[in-house]
Image (tube, rainbow, N blue to C red; front, side):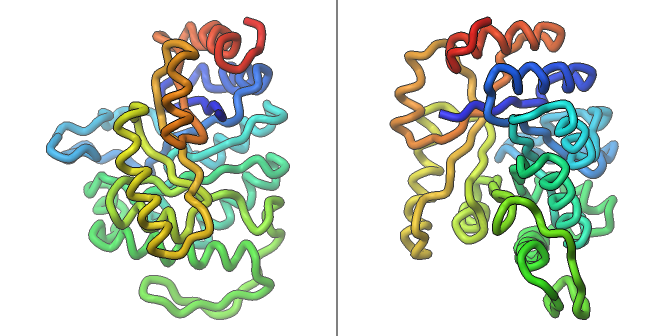
Length: 281
């Protein structure tokens, strides 16, 4: 089992200390959420039937790729991921360049979580049609993968059009950094099968994660995929006896936040690593 660190559940002033500690202790990855903007009116929620947004509009947010590039310079081995980035709010050139830069400055440690987003008002503020976000995401991913791998790229699509361009240098990871597609709608799960090295979910238990994994398995078979995408979810762990259920479910990576208060994060990471990773506290 791989263990990732949920930086979004930590006070920003603790991010660097936690990242350095997790790197030292053998955590596999760290994950930073992102939004482009939070409108004051945040009506809506990513959870069906719940209108209250999960975060207030004054929540601190950062340019995820700039912040992760900073953390790349403060760490040596831990992988650096977005959970999740919203490509449909940017031009594909912006997205592709951000991914390429993080992968290069981290010496090939980028893990790219992708989503379409849930906050319609954020799209409205940016002047982008919320209803087209899925199709925009698909086209953006198609373009970015070509920019990362092909010598010359021209494109004529529904949302983006451009004459032949060069995109250099290419990312370190070949053919490109892993793409982990977020979301649990049928369209999101199909996107994970079509585009993703993995699927990345929100909080789950070892029991309720079986439903999206079963749907991913069925979609993989329907699309003739060679294998099931890598499975990543957020989770809370109490002791090692719980690990068997996660492994049986087919989960490959758990993103955790083992602290109760941000100021205790480093100590909590050491305790967690001693039990689950085998590093002394």
